Length: 114
Image 1: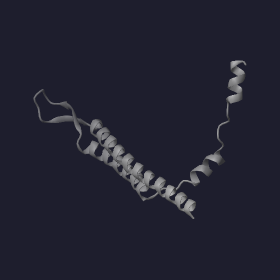
Image 2 (image 1 turned 180 degrees about the vertical axis):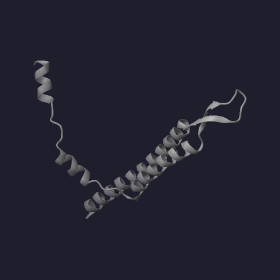
Image 3 (image 1 turned 90 degrees about the horizontal axis):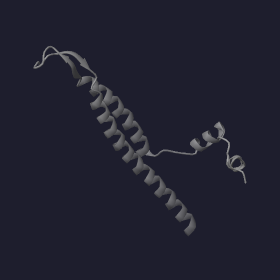
Image 4 (image 1 turned 120 degrees about the horizontal axis):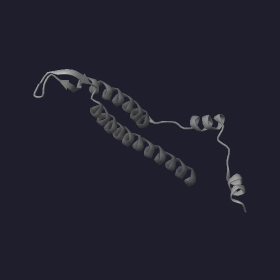
Protein backbone atom coordinates (compact mmCIF):
# COMPACT_ATOMS: atom_id res chain seq x y z
CA UNK A 1 0.00 0.00 0.00
CA UNK A 2 1.20 3.47 -0.84
CA UNK A 3 2.00 5.79 2.07
CA UNK A 4 -0.27 8.53 0.73
CA UNK A 5 -3.18 6.10 0.38
CA UNK A 6 -2.68 5.01 3.96
CA UNK A 7 -2.64 8.62 5.16
CA UNK A 8 -5.79 9.39 3.16
CA UNK A 9 -7.61 6.40 4.63
CA UNK A 10 -6.59 7.27 8.20
CA UNK A 11 -7.38 10.98 7.83
CA UNK A 12 -10.38 12.21 9.80
CA UNK A 13 -12.33 15.39 9.30
CA UNK A 14 -12.13 18.14 11.88
CA UNK A 15 -15.00 18.11 14.38
CA UNK A 16 -17.90 20.36 13.53
CA UNK A 17 -18.97 23.21 15.79
CA UNK A 18 -22.20 21.46 16.74
CA UNK A 19 -20.41 18.36 18.01
CA UNK A 20 -17.98 20.46 20.04
CA UNK A 21 -20.78 22.46 21.67
CA UNK A 22 -22.70 19.26 22.46
CA UNK A 23 -19.66 17.87 24.26
CA UNK A 24 -19.12 21.07 26.23
CA UNK A 25 -22.80 21.33 27.22
CA UNK A 26 -22.68 17.87 28.76
CA UNK A 27 -19.81 18.85 31.06
CA UNK A 28 -20.85 20.30 34.43
CA UNK A 29 -18.46 21.89 36.89
CA UNK A 30 -18.72 21.33 40.63
CA UNK A 31 -18.00 23.88 43.37
CA UNK A 32 -14.26 23.15 43.59
CA UNK A 33 -13.74 23.55 39.85
CA UNK A 34 -15.67 26.83 39.74
CA UNK A 35 -13.72 28.03 42.79
CA UNK A 36 -10.42 27.12 41.11
CA UNK A 37 -11.29 29.05 37.94
CA UNK A 38 -12.40 32.10 39.96
CA UNK A 39 -9.25 31.86 42.10
CA UNK A 40 -7.03 31.83 39.01
CA UNK A 41 -8.76 34.92 37.62
CA UNK A 42 -8.31 36.72 40.96
CA UNK A 43 -4.65 35.66 41.23
CA UNK A 44 -4.02 36.80 37.65
CA UNK A 45 -5.36 40.26 38.49
CA UNK A 46 -3.38 40.29 41.75
CA UNK A 47 -0.21 39.55 39.78
CA UNK A 48 -0.84 42.65 37.69
CA UNK A 49 -1.58 44.77 40.77
CA UNK A 50 1.47 43.60 42.73
CA UNK A 51 3.70 43.91 39.69
CA UNK A 52 2.67 47.54 39.47
CA UNK A 53 2.80 48.23 43.23
CA UNK A 54 6.28 46.81 43.73
CA UNK A 55 7.87 48.32 40.64
CA UNK A 56 11.53 47.82 39.87
CA UNK A 57 14.02 50.61 39.46
CA UNK A 58 15.17 50.98 35.88
CA UNK A 59 17.43 54.05 36.07
CA UNK A 60 18.88 55.61 39.21
CA UNK A 61 20.36 59.06 39.49
CA UNK A 62 23.84 57.69 40.22
CA UNK A 63 25.44 54.35 41.06
CA UNK A 64 24.83 54.21 44.83
CA UNK A 65 21.49 55.99 44.82
CA UNK A 66 18.25 55.16 46.57
CA UNK A 67 16.19 57.43 44.34
CA UNK A 68 14.80 55.93 41.16
CA UNK A 69 14.35 58.14 38.16
CA UNK A 70 12.38 55.59 36.11
CA UNK A 71 10.41 52.66 37.52
CA UNK A 72 9.15 49.68 35.54
CA UNK A 73 6.52 47.00 35.96
CA UNK A 74 7.91 44.14 38.08
CA UNK A 75 7.35 41.37 35.55
CA UNK A 76 9.25 38.71 37.51
CA UNK A 77 7.02 39.20 40.57
CA UNK A 78 3.90 39.05 38.41
CA UNK A 79 5.10 35.82 36.73
CA UNK A 80 5.91 34.29 40.13
CA UNK A 81 2.42 35.12 41.45
CA UNK A 82 0.82 33.79 38.25
CA UNK A 83 2.73 30.49 38.39
CA UNK A 84 1.99 29.91 42.07
CA UNK A 85 -1.66 30.82 41.55
CA UNK A 86 -1.88 28.52 38.53
CA UNK A 87 -0.44 25.60 40.48
CA UNK A 88 -2.80 26.14 43.42
CA UNK A 89 -5.78 26.54 41.09
CA UNK A 90 -4.77 23.44 39.16
CA UNK A 91 -4.53 21.45 42.40
CA UNK A 92 -8.00 22.59 43.54
CA UNK A 93 -9.44 21.89 40.08
CA UNK A 94 -7.93 18.39 40.14
CA UNK A 95 -9.50 17.71 43.53
CA UNK A 96 -12.87 18.76 42.12
CA UNK A 97 -12.37 16.51 39.10
CA UNK A 98 -11.47 13.56 41.34
CA UNK A 99 -14.61 14.18 43.39
CA UNK A 100 -16.68 14.21 40.19
CA UNK A 101 -15.13 10.92 39.06
CA UNK A 102 -15.77 9.31 42.45
CA UNK A 103 -19.41 10.43 42.38
CA UNK A 104 -19.83 8.90 38.89
CA UNK A 105 -18.24 5.65 40.06
CA UNK A 106 -20.54 5.59 43.07
CA UNK A 107 -23.61 6.11 40.85
CA UNK A 108 -22.55 3.29 38.52
CA UNK A 109 -21.88 0.95 41.45
CA UNK A 110 -25.25 1.73 43.02
CA UNK A 111 -26.97 0.90 39.69
CA UNK A 112 -24.97 -2.31 39.48
CA UNK A 113 -26.01 -3.45 42.99
CA UNK A 114 -29.71 -2.72 42.39
